[in-house]
Length: 139
Picture 1 (cartoon, rainbow, N blue to C red):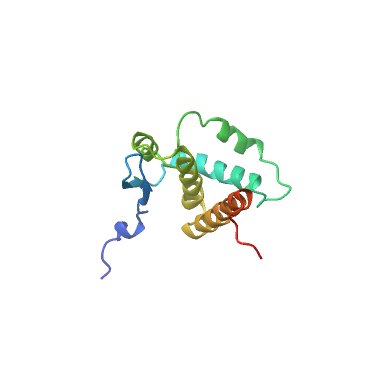
Picture 2 (tube, helix red, strand yellow; picture 1 turned 60 degrees about the vertical axis):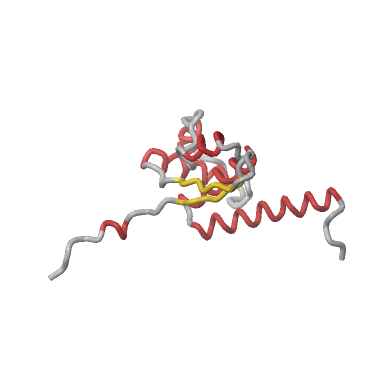
């Protein structure tokens, strides 16, 4: 006879992100899965991100998606309460922005997709910085 459903297997685990803090330590920040309402905002943010990154070429953000984006005020739906914890710990604001971007794609697409976007964006940024400072390897 079949046992009851294993609801724990259905649960989406938290995302734990280790980041350097202002005091020189590395701290693990726990980002909880988004609520249903926040998921709407993250999906809209993912569409905007893909349009801005050129992944969705020739696509205009639909009015319905823009309305959801306009509803996002001073909140951080991709990071939730971890956002304020990162700020309080003195995590670099650029790092916080990157983690928010990563989490948008992590929660809406997949870990693999978010990892790929991160590598593409930040590897290109690092290469551009190295080229600008003359530290890039020469051919």
